Image (cartoon, rainbow, N blue to C red; front, side, top):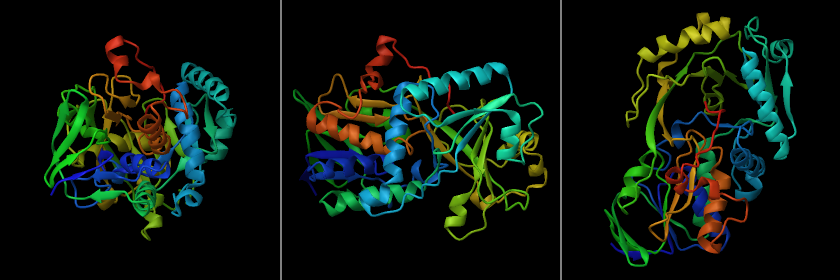
Length: 394
């Protein structure tokens, strides 16, 4: 089989689906999404924790979040599908004055970008918000009640089905074998279903972004990094609804496993921690030994978790697509016309997918991003030494 497309999107996860949706909304429907798996969402989208937040440290991330959260809040009106948005909030907990000062500085930056509902709160307020927390070593924190949770697969499905209603095609079980480039840039893509002629390719392949970029002769500084999630069995001491809680001491964070409840299963608590010993690689196997690493941190901050039992069937591992500065790469490749990047989100791909889709659609169709200036997210920042600094990475 062979064919043609105005735009070919490699990767059928939430980011690729958003790009297709926004292209179709803008009138560009001759779009093909290539997905190598038998179903969409088998990569990072289906393994994500499903959080959305505006509490970031850099202006560009705050802007991406602000637009995306508004879009997700109105997702059903836009697509006819549910996003699962639950504004339960994000609570950052500081145990040193230095951490608290950083949260205060972040809040001022957030205010400048129009996010005015982030509160700096004390230990007593934190204890009132989540009574299960140990707060004797807490000096304060920040809380935003419009941060919260979403259902990533539902959003991906909404983007995809809305796009397909407008003519977008999804090719499942289709692997990319090469990207053809000529003197004018991208010329097409060789797949396991044949050659597709196109002048525009969007790399939305998550942790595999560097491998796909290399097919067009481009080096992209994106590496895969495993993150593991531990799920407990239901605990009577924990309420059904509480915020995402992030302990800035070591990055331990937890949230209710509301996805289990949505699927009709018993709801436990999801525990996560960025293990500094983790090295880059494509391993997505959950290691039972990780439970013994994370439980002491969980018990320290949430004493009632001392008696928690682990729901092994819901423990999982997924891949972050990490860049050197933990910011996304969005834009056209400098050396290959027609090759666009939507990569390197470093754990923020789900929450920033609405903004990313619109930005890519604008760049492709209009030649510029009108939603916001994303020049700071170009891949060239790494060769120019103009890296960004995001302190709010979990």
